[in-house]
Amino acid sequence: MSRFTGRVAIVTGAAGGIGLAACARFASEGASVVAVDLASADLGAAVAAIEGAGGTALSVPADVTNSAQVAGYVNAAREAFGRVDVLFNNAGIEGTYAPMIEYSEESFDQVIAVNVRGVWLGIKYAAPAMIASGGGSIVNTASVAGLLGSRGISPYSASKHAVAGLTKSAALELATSGVRVNAVCPAPIETRMMRSLEAYIGGDDADDIRKRFAERLPVQRYGEPHEVAALVAFLASDEASYITGSLYPIDGGFTAGR
Image (tube, rainbow, N blue to C red; front, side):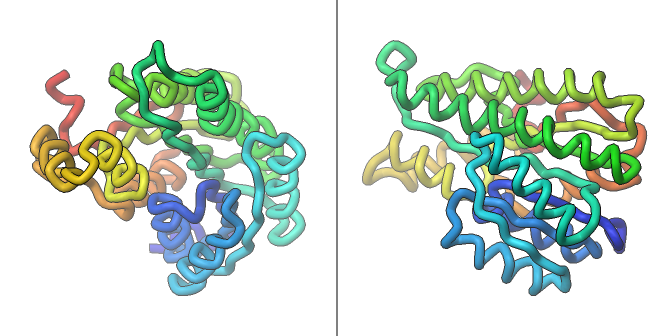
């Protein structure tokens, strides 16, 4: 498929599992891809994934909580490629794990800054660039934790509920401008974030925790980053031209019975 030939996609959190998979997917379908991540040392992997899939890559180290740096990655995309068509607003952190009443203010503020402010700033600066290019698509990474409550990660869950709200609000505000806004809501995916959660809960028995998590899913397994990337690519493509303001669980059936 070549759904993104001649188009420019920005991927934040590009050095992580889902971000890497999305970079490769967009590149494989013809996009020029701007890989954004705070972990500048890890952006080489994103560039390799993009170029390995046959795409043209630009890496931009940026802190998504910093408005000047967010404006900077959007401007870098326009300067390098002349336009912005897609933003995969994917950067996020899980924060620490603790009961709500024991959670530190510093950790709470950091989670909200990255997961909410970072998404808002991405929309704020990318949407005008898309409008100037004739329209586009923004896909935000929420979570099933943004659809349900979650023990031990209340700031993360709150932040992903906020992403859901930003997604719907932005979709309404931008509907007549040609910019669509949707969100994906993954359940456990084979990423570093899940390894961190398993280790926190299980310690030396992290593998047992992983097995228990998988057994809670109707399909009895974690999702793969490339499966999330496939949904993101669909939502960003013209095939989803009548879809905006929607939240898409990609969760192996986890929320179906809840």
